[in-house]
Length: 199
Image (cartoon, rainbow, N blue to C red; front, side, top):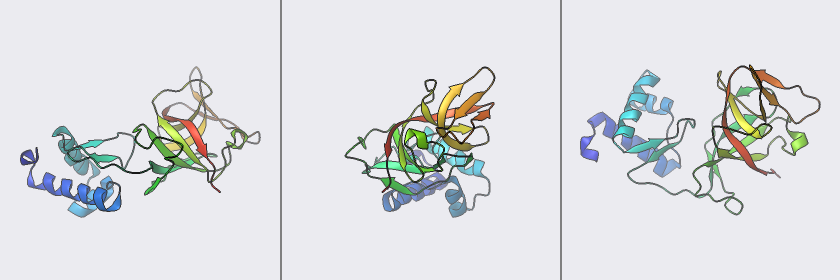
């Protein structure tokens, strides 16, 4: 497997493996670019795609840090905390570098679950408050009215109820003091399957 790698690809792989083994999560595209003096993010992505094609790594398309070692998988305890999400006005999702241990409530070996920390109070009528954690089931579609983590074409993420309409999508808060957000395009990252109150 490794004999098919170029010298640079092997170096990139070893950097990824080192970060996963010693830090617990893979590097970002920016970190790889900085380490190997690759100015363009596309240059880094080309290396990652080559490693993926050769069966050395796997990547989750929507999750910035979700590089896995295909050749030597690592089991983690807990679910990946991949960022913060707005439960209020839209804002850019922020990367986090942690894992959250909800093993007593959710099976940590389910690869289709991840955790987001809630920021804002637009979902308080659904008992989701600022600072809580939401456990998300990764999926691309949602039922009308389902609470989802959604991302717009501008890359802004929010936690709202999902209502597709004729020429737009209504992202409905659960707070009587707030108005819905209307967007032309948005995609579902996943649906809420659990809420863990931060105490």
